[in-house]
Amino acid sequence: MLVFIDQHVGPEYLFNFKVINVIILTGICIVFGPIFPLFYFVGFVGLMVTYILERLTLAYFYRLP
Image 1: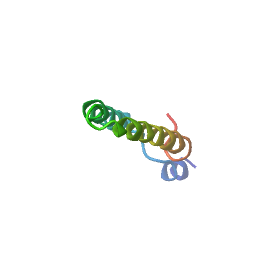
Image 2: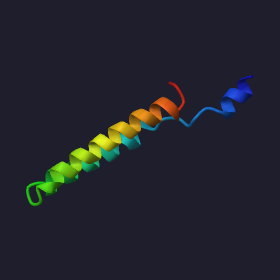
Image 3: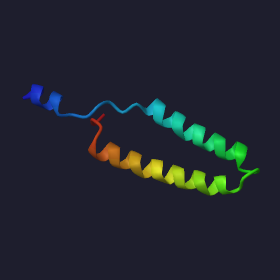
């Protein structure tokens, strides 16, 4: 039974890579936002898409902690 469960669970959730992506997106928006104000909106949309996708993948794809 445990072999079946181990074969059909998702991968481990790598939190550090997810945080790095959010920090890079936020940093780009802070640096280039005053020059090109549309970056604030693009950054907000990017963060919302990232949030929604991470919530869905945590709920349905990754292994439970």
